[in-house]
Picture 1: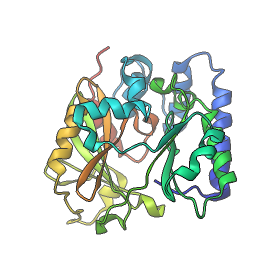
Picture 2 (picture 1 turned 180 degrees about the vertical axis):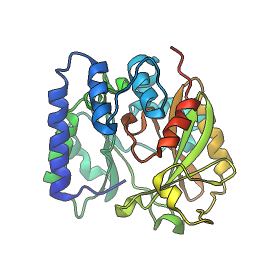
Picture 3 (picture 1 turned 30 degrees about the horizontal axis):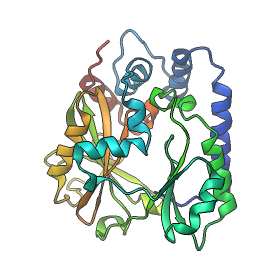
Picture 4 (picture 1 turned 90 degrees about the horizontal axis):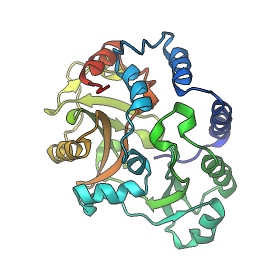
Amino acid sequence: MRSLSCLWELRYQYLQYYVMQFTKWFPSDRIYLSLLYYAHFKRKIDWKKLRTFNEKLQWLKLYDRQNDYTLLVDKQSAKKIIGEIIGEEHIIPTLGVWDDWNDFMLSKQLLPEKFVLKCTHDSASTVVVDSTKANWNELRVFYEKRLASNFYLLGREWPYKNIIPRLMAEPYMSDDSALNNGGLTDYKFHCFNGNVDNVMVCIDRNIGFPKFYFFDRHWRLLRINKRGKDAPKDFSLPKPQNIDQMFEIASLLSKGKPFVRVDLYVVNQIIYFGELTFYPSSGFDSNLLEETDVLWGNKLILKR
């Protein structure tokens, strides 16, 4: 979670908005994804011989269209579905849901002084709001652009195509653990065909310098990304007391899915559901090592 920053962030949001408006005129999602993939990796996708993880995520966008995907990526409707599977005690409460910015402003005096605001229909729109310091006009510009955008258009992630855009507020949560300077630690479980392969631990996101490290079930560091490869020989992070339970939750939530990343938080030893991510970095993750991209591609079995 982050605080909305300044001019560069707003410029990025404007750019993203106009890119989405332009790309909606592309006649074919497959052509669009082929061009976008080449722009990121400087190589073409061979759609008949997909090898890497990032390549196969592009295929999943086009051809893996399970009925529940849209409900599972909608941040509000997902809570009910996931709560029925793993228990309501693992679901972060909702303080309110609004169709537009004006409706939110009419209700904001009922919210706590500090809370989390996000859109239900997209990614990376989460902002920690401190009402005593908030720049409401800056937030209005940010969220009105978000609410007017169809996130599907940016990376052709099909589950987002038909979600109704809304604003949602949640309680601000922090953890007493010294690991993350009082912020929340993200635990992101990568699941291939119902099997939980590893967990990516994200720290220092709250101070604007996120760091990512991968671990296996036995909490051994996996040197499969750039930061992990360069870590010192004996590097590790504190192992959560309830890591086994988190792996169990990720296993439950990944059943029946060719690939999904299950995002969880731990707040003072209580596990909370974050979200399900079907296409990390929209299938354009250049942080993974090339050999990892191939390794994960072998793990991801497509049912054509």
